[in-house]
Amino acid sequence: MFSILLALPLLTAVPPLPPPNATPSVVKHPKVIGWPAGKTPTAPAGFEVSLFADELDSPRWFAVLPNGDVLVAEAKSIPKKEAKPEQEKGKKESKAVGPSANRITLLRDADHDGKPEVRTVFAENLEQPFGMCLVKETLFIANTNAVLAFAYKTGWTKLEGPGLKILDLPKGGYNNHWTRNLVANKDGTKLYVTVGSASNAGDHGTAEEVLRANILEMNLDGTGLRVFASGLRNPVGLGWEPTTGKLWTAVNERDELGDELVPDYLTSVTDGGFYGWPFSYFGQNEDPRRKGERPDLVKKALVPDYPLGSHTASLGLCFYTDKAFPAKYKGGAFVGQHGSWNRSKFVGYRVAFVPFQDGKPAAAEAEDFLTGFIANENEVYGRPVGVAVATDGSLLVADDASNKVWRVTATGK
Image (cartoon, rainbow, N blue to C red; front, side, top):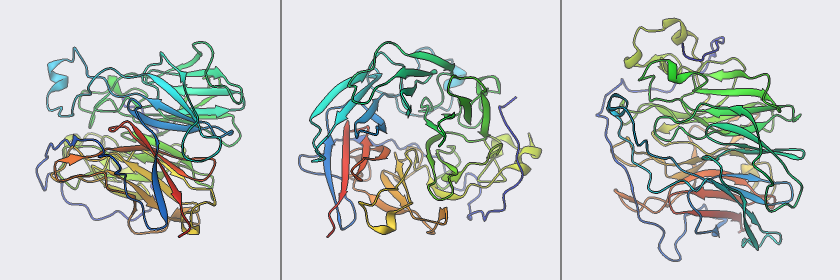
């Protein structure tokens, strides 16, 4: 059966949603045309956007080390060469071009002038690496199929050896559900790992969904594995909310129910919580494709804290805890929205900002923070994914489609 833990209902207001298939399910992939010379994304007044790094190979995710070094995971989805016809039926995602780089690059900007003086291959021969997490002198890297542990010393520009595999993870998955993010708790005693679903809405049965659509918890040596939260179709961004210390995640929801379904979301994560996938969405709205299968689980599905728009592909997440940005940004969440492919008009393609107060979102809708990625109704310059706060307080944004990393700084003007 699906890997699911149950929880008590959470009394949260559900946003008004249209019925399923109120509009047709539309496939509209963007054509990526790259950024013209001198053009950058657009930030609000009082901020400046500059190019931090270029000529990467699908930069997806970051880890910022205590000494200021920035690690960039370069990886992308790999098309299945021998997929079964029934598995490909109705599958409409675009195909990645070329092999995955499968490496992590280190960028060092010691003088904080926005131009890294050091750029080296930090780790290579990985398998679609994504999440990275430093605990004392161990750097954990989440490949698509395993979590690895590497010895690390401050200032190193390259890891030594192949690393120690501490946990196997299920490999592959629907669309871009190959990403595996990870964070450690405050005490550095537990790791939390995201594993997205292997299908859009439980399409191929239960066997391929074991340990999927979950956030997993484990000890630093890989023991004590358990499902921390389940029913999360594709949780990618992870972060600890600074006021309450609760774990939050950004979740990429399901496709093919029309333009306005289903909202991606930002939510706190309850230990043992079940968030609906695949039987229901945004609480107890039953998915018509799973109608009547598990009413018991639909009844128990938790309502996410904050909708982020349907088909926005909300992936990146970081909380802003520095003082370099204006006070309104302190404690708020930046969310990288990679952008739609299953909607008649593009949505997402931005970095959104959600202000927080007392540990909860404090605005009815997420604000634009970094925009300008959409060139016209059919073309985009790039697609933002990972977001991270550098040690100087600037915001770094991975643009995997244009192979760039953008840096946003406050000008004080």
